[in-house]
Image 1 (spheres, helix red, strand yellow):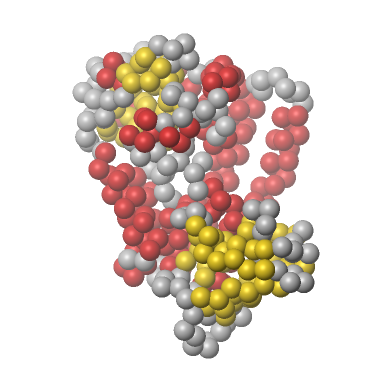
Image 2: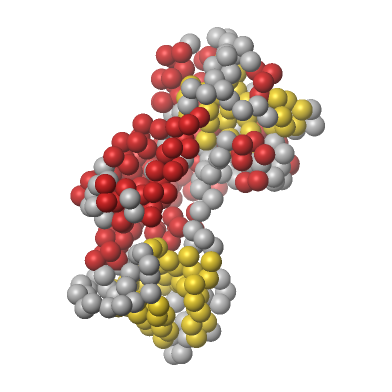
Length: 369
């Protein structure tokens, strides 16, 4: 689960159309006609968390003008700080239409990049629609437990669902990236969907699908920096840290020297983490007698939720947390920007694996143990 979830949710939220506009223009003109919209709207750069411009809404209409030094993904928020629309803004005329009470009605018309940006959204929306019946069945089954901890079999179902939908989305997005390898939208897609949390090999292969031009774009450079940061940890000594367990006892990573240890970053509120936990439990049960252990590092802020999740998911290994959320000292030490995230450390204290999830974790442990 990324910290920049607003970027991902905006892609899922909106629908797009396109009318090609070949009129040369020095800057951009972004106009909106949103039925039921009132007050003010704010043009925001979500990555920088910065308000670029403000406009007054009159009879559902608003307008932004300016100049982009480079096309970029921006969002529009209403007075209540709720997302109205998102657009890949470039120096041309772009229009937004729809109804304020119906996010699916929002249409963005204008540039070629907006059209491509819409293709990405359409891919996600299509997969979500296909998997919705399964999700609804799982939600209905979850309701039958009436506040009790679901059985392990239900956790397996949720994990299987999560893997299936993630694999399908990423496969479809990789096709888009190959077909639009020179587009900055392809670079944006790589940056948003194939970052930390993926195996290093998957990150490298997906980045290699981009043309040199796209790799040199804003989001291409951002992903390249992320990739370099991921690579630099491999085959290097794991930085030591110390945090308290749920009983206030300090535990250090260095105390595991002489063992294979999986440092598992997670949180009680992270659904993908909870879905991955059955795989980690399975790996622990299989290899704990072969000099293998796990150290769970939580990015929780509420102790009760953290402790309850440990019990609910039956996680028998040691757990630590400084209850600082994304400001966790261990998380910042390892540059954690999304969870679940893990590293595998050998008995000499050297990092030999990262982002090992599902079958990848089982495969790696079977190799080294």
